[in-house]
Length: 322
Image (cartoon, rainbow, N blue to C red; front, side, top):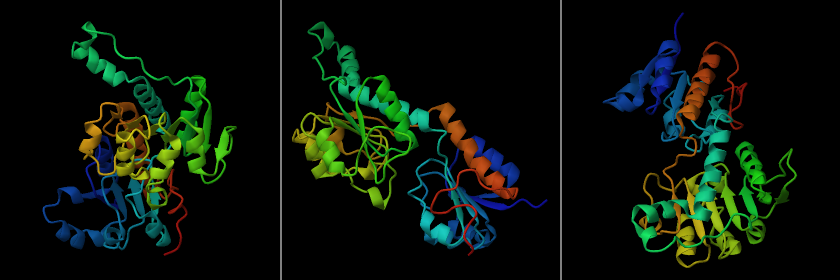
């Protein structure tokens, strides 16, 4: 049986690429010495595309692949893919949801605790020998806070469940009320920020959510407020956040994501009262293996004439007719 032609746009985990090699006729765009030549010669044959979040899968690229039927994306976020364009042309796009919910939720709670209780700063305090001179300063607490979750999807619900275990009141903001939760819903993000003491951001990226955490929201959160971002860097107006931290309009921030990764603003690096992580929300071996396998399972299901397991809303299965 002839194996479908597949293009890997960006480097992927070895376990992904090894399995794709077994099921498809594969070319690697990221390894091509002459990308233009590869797209000209192999592009017209390509029926499937695989990519990581770092690869820009836009109309310009997909337009070079006239037989393209499916894009298998690694990660729950897919804002680097023009899924709307793909869906309108009958191209299915899949991502890797659910398998990373618990890992990202764990990271969010760990980041919140580290930020509130200043655990990284306390660690440095010990290593620098400062404890010998005097005790580490007292910190603020999680126990007197109401936490506003920005985005009550699968991961948002997992985060809220963990907050309940810490006896922390939970409220949330989303465009529509979430099913299956009893937390107070705020249609107005600014009002929720005013009523909450911390925000945990776990909403999708993209144009619709760009800079939704802006100057006005941060000012509403107030001088005791803390912002945690485990979503996408684009969701927060980074300069407004820096200004708010510098001017003490908010207390602190814990950030796993940034607007221009891996370039973190020097102003944030120099602030000792914030906690910074290198986008490790789902970065465990266990979780990444599950995500990688789901990429493969989606593409193999399609190759075998079966429905892909996790198509995204903008580019669903069954696909629209081209």
